Length: 368
Ligand code: SF4
Ligand code: FES
Image (cartoon, rainbow, N blue to C red):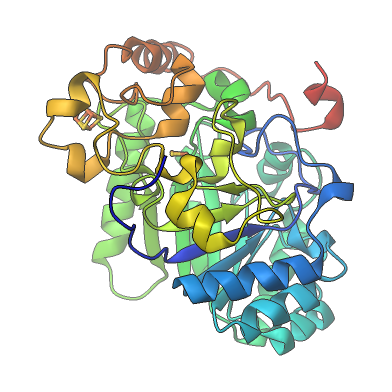
């Protein structure tokens, strides 16, 4: 299928260097089946991807994973992105980020660092990560601050840390973050397995929104980014800014996707950067054109005045919950599948105080 009109240039590239990760977070959005290390793109292949991305118009690359620090050739990969002229952000758990490694990475061209943290309470942070890690993250924050690179903190929010939002924001200030991304958990990939223990209550979310508004009204402090939760609102998120509209994800094995979570879509048949130039992938591949624009929409989206605003919501969520990515996102109150979301949100209200029984992201659990 060819695009009706040539799509606008992509703005960002998410470069997933590896799915390997030292943490075991229950909200991981990576697919259930992870890419094996032996099939990862080599540094030279990444260099070609960055050069082609820059030619296509990409201005920003997020160097991510899994944990990108596990790649011994990370500095070479970063240098290639820098040489291509794109702004490069390292997205890391912080485990293994020493002053020496960060010095080498900034020397290679890293422009900013985003550090993930699980909670402000160290014991709960370690519980969520499935291992001791909070102290190492605090140390990594110090290393980033000392290096003087722009510093963002990312915290995935859910039932078991939302009530500590004031402390989480205070931690961001204390650690010297320029920006704190408060990312309400999204439920695809591994996170779907843990949905019932992670879903917050409506009251938790309302309190959290008031906390964010109060902090935004105060002068100073880090910039707060609030990533919308969608199970309680009846309103879908404009996911990815539209399918194939703004960014390209390249998975560790070279699979090119319009969205990182789309790796799970069994019938998408995504192209691979090993087989095709990125320009063809962006402009002409079936996978990137599948849900571009509005012509593919059926059901309530087809006639809806919001279809150019939210793009029918999230394709990955529609696929994960209904098995059909072309259906209206069940998060939308107008969707005939909305009960799939509403019933879970109601259950979260009922079970709001339940103790966390996470299914951790570990190989043994993947085989279950
Ligand atoms: Fe958005 Fe479709 Fe729902 Fe309309 S019907 S609000 S376009 S998801
Ligand atoms: Fe893939 Fe929403 S997460 S389109």
